[in-house]
Length: 420
Length: 97
Image 1: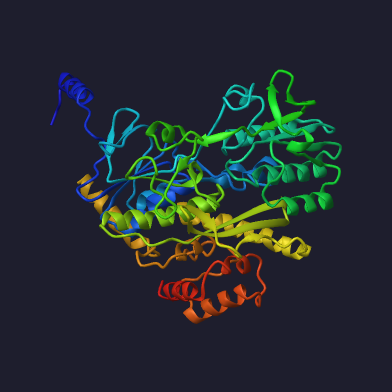
Image 2: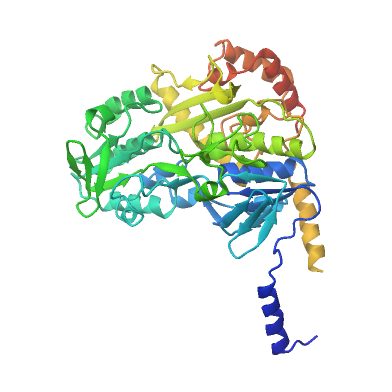
């Protein structure tokens, strides 16, 4: 059939005037997931595995996912960024519908998500996993433009490469300053793993240089293990300044590449500023975030305490004792998938048990871990007493090497489970 | 025509994805697969659990819990589960292919 040019234009005009939902969701129960990171992509995949009759749509802006765990290795030149990158092709093969568009609004009353461009997705249950937003209003002087000079590298991708290039371009004898935020924030041991691997790079390639951590806290994850390892491996290359030693940065002077504390102006050769954070913007506009900027949820179902029929998982959620880690996000997603499938069938979800395991590398062959087992207790997800904790302080170097090997297996397994 | 092609692709995808997290998984079982890969193609030193005899998994977990089996991290995780929970998880994994 030949269609005249005029008819084509007419048809296009009609479609623009009356936009039809571009994504068919079918007649079964509908689940929409916002955010395709470790939490959201896992949730989409496992809801579909729970019950193939559920129409699952995953809304994500970027067709390429860049994983944060192990991205400190990219900064330190130990691996390439492409080893961090995954796509959603296998996820699509499992029957999950993908919408590579930003979600612009959530109408909780009508149970509808609007995407950029006007497409609307209705849901019976919505899973929100928007991750974090960096608060460019949280540290005076540190704006989005400033991040191009002083990378945060707290969302893996271009920022990771920018920090790496700055380290590579730095002359020997320079000072790398890492600004670490107050709690809570994504990946609690992350700044310290990063400092360790940068110190490793400097010790190997630029031995007259050093890393300085300016911290808004007096304590941090795996602290004793990190500090013991620093004494052993990097006595001349790494220094940590705690809150009580004046480590809190109050202002960033981008032009002078200087970090300002109560007592000192620290001039940096390379500055890595990890600013305060909050749940991703869509969580704020959907009304699932509270005044803290994070999302309170029921500890057994992860349903929002503020808006019904919406579950929030991953870094954006307040999960009691569970840290904001990729493993936690994936573990919460699997529980959430089971909860959502059970609720859609009219059932009652069982009380969950959750696990977190988190590996940090202090050097390429020196791994340390923290683990935890959690259950709902008094309205919070709480550590099960006696379980979990960090690697032994007195473990031999062979145990650290073994944990470094397991770290590598950990990354392959978790990314394989989500994206493979 | 295009619709037919799509549905054939979907069916093939269905067949290709064997390992499923069944709805009857006991509490805690879902967490294991973050480290113990369900997909045998994943290269990791961590042993798989699916299809292992339940007694092997239970014995190992109870020994980890009691500090009688050396481990890097499982000694810390096993302490979070009761013997009954361990038994349920072990039996469930034994039944997975």
